[in-house]
Image 1 (cartoon, one colour):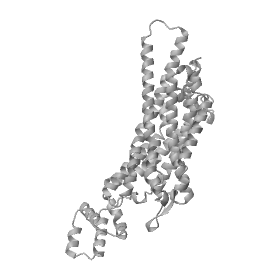
Image 2 (cartoon, rainbow, N blue to C red):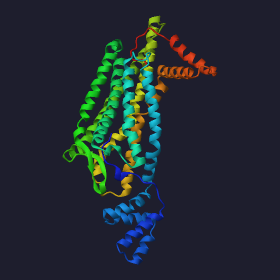
Image 3 (cartoon, rainbow, N blue to C red):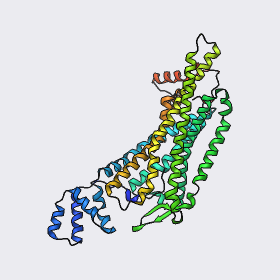
Image 4 (cartoon, rainbow, N blue to C red):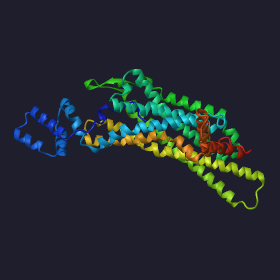
Amino acid sequence: MSYGEPESDMQLLIMTPASNLTSTLYQILIAMQMDQNMTSEILALPPEDQLLFIESMNLNSDVQSIDLEDQRMLIPEYRINKAIGLYLPPFLLLMGTFGNIMTFLILRNKAMTRQSTNLFLAALAIADSIVLFVGLLRRWLGDIMQVDIQSKSDWLCKTVSVFGYSSSQFSVWLIIAVTIERYLVVSHPLHTSRYCNLTRAKRIICLIALLIVAINFHFLFTVSVQEHEHGLKSCDSAPQFKILVTIVWPWIDASLYALLPFVLIVVFNTLIIVQILKATIWRAAQNGPLINTANKRNVCKDNNIKLTVMLLSVSFTFLITTFPMAIVMVFHSGWSRDIETVPLSVMAQRQLIRTSAEMLMFLNHSVNFYLYCALGQKFRNQVWKTLCRRTVSANSNLSDHSQHLYCSRVKGYHNHNKSTCFDETNL
């Protein structure tokens, strides 16, 4: 995930009438003292040909800055990118913030805190919220106000870089930890209490956090606010660390955020699915009546499989939504080096690809709550209990009897389905 590269020269501009391009081109031709007949012929060209003509001219930076907006307004990719950057982030911010807050509150409820998986998922909600506010909110405000707060001062540049990269990588490795824990549960069910407990989960979360922060600590020294032409400032690599930040680091970040997690999650998810299939086949092969203890064991296995399916959906959602960003991160350093030589149409296509990949990535940090609700029955019931309790407490004279009835059903469901089986990670 990228937090430090300057992107001011890639910002989109609002579309203006095509006549402005002709007017700008006319001013350029007059400034160049072009022959009147030649000027008339050039101005009679279609807007697309006028754009190609301007791009083919070796103009100085002052003239280029004059016609830049008019060139961009003819490129559909720029206009699509502008719309995505303006309208999608607030939706993801609202959806993700609400979901992550609700997830944390539900998983820190007394009925949920005894399970190690819930501790990982509660930490994941915090990490996802940081990613949305440090990454997505900053990006959206930058598009609206045309100012990146990260470039306002050195300490903001360094702090945002450390928190941005650390939170996104921390989020990913929490998903890996949950995936590995789920594999241990399905492959060694008799040792669940030893592998999956709160003490071990807390130690793993702290260890992951410390390692991730240590890896990204270098941003306190390797990046700073750099001043470019025309007084533009950006949070960029310090001159002595340019190779590390612009060439080496994108590969490290891509490996930590997507490539290595992709391999690990695919491998462990495959092993989990194989174990579930084996258990299902074994159970289907059993004949004859089962004793009560066996029935209870089967209930536990059913709950275990449901939770496993839910966590598989979380990890597969991560794979689908973040892998495109990993590819873009690898190519982005090369794109930055030839930004002055490629046509504007190619720049527009690259930026649209990058923005689309970023929005998919931020979507991954916004949807976990809704996956838990859709696939986790115990989590969903706990959400309803919390919402009903808050609604009833806010209005003691509530007349909607159906809501009271549903709340009673949710509460009764848990009492009716209590079991003596031991599943430390049931959700």
